[in-house]
Length: 73
Image (cartoon, rainbow, N blue to C red; front, side):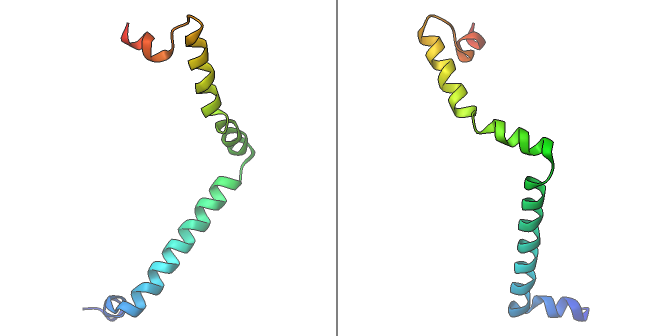
């Protein structure tokens, strides 16, 4: 077995490697989310999704069909 694989198979060394992998993955996700103006605008618009669903339900109470009822028809 290669030496680097034996080094990695020891528990105290594999914890460090796993920590580094998770840390760089987390940093990569943060960079992806918080960079880019188009992505920032799109993510900001997502915060209103729950409120838009409530408006559709209220409209259905006024005699309009909601999306679920239209799909069943």
